[in-house]
Image 1 (cartoon, rainbow, N blue to C red):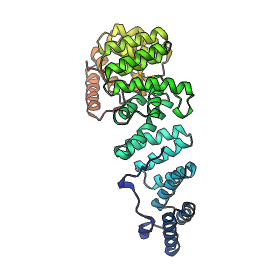
Image 2: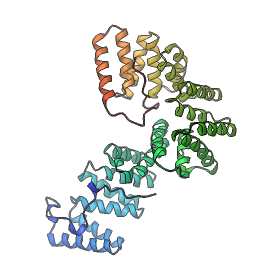
Image 3: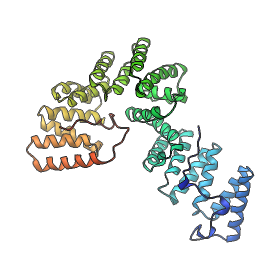
Image 4: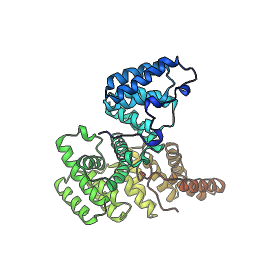
Length: 386
């Protein structure tokens, strides 16, 4: 799947029109460089892409500080699915133009094509942070790959947030539905690597999720009921529905989470979200057993440290609660829920200056643009302030 990822701001001018005088501080002999650039433009116009690539390589060898040459080499490599050469070219380009969001996006797509998924996710997240997804022509493919890679990295809630954005704006094509369903079922398999049975199951889950996200709540309820009847032992299916319900009907979400826990008593996502529901309802004692079990099963997860810390502070176990909140803070220093929990803990401890500092930090973080993909275990869902 390929689209043009070149917003106007970053689109180089035709090769023959690039002013050569400003190409580099140490310019090559003008005639040689001029000739190569002109010949490369002519070869490209004649669709003789191998010759264009060869000529551009000679040009950047003469002048490695020429960013547009590296850009064209990257684009030609991407178009030909020559991902290794494209990654190399975009890397050179980014050394010269380090804040070019589209170049990060294209390099990330090339890394995805060559199955370098960790590097691809890093580059695509960087591209999104630099605004590459703000261009409507590029948003769907870039966000789709971001969601695929987040799920592949088992960052399922973040992936689901991105998929919900896509589902609201894109038609329900089979690939999107299967990918959405795989993330909802907490399966890190990429759609292109999924078996036929995985794809069929994921597509059915994705269709039910699509109905919910697009506002057809009765159809979603029926679709999930049918899905549960067809796949009665999939605990993550109930968690998927609970995740979608949580912001709209927390009580209904908890019922789904309890069903998930009946099927798998050690489901950390379900345990943690039940605990979080109790914290939001100001019943920390109810949260505590779920939070303790979740943290015991996966102490390295940010959300297990957060919910246990908040539950302990809520039940006035301030020393242990602060310890877990400090661990959560080290995992995610800018999470507003951690700072709210610390403010409560310090206030209860009589440490007014520290409590005031945490309240100020909480307000500052609340005013910052929030990650629309949060509502996760990697990043906590927004809570009602105490």
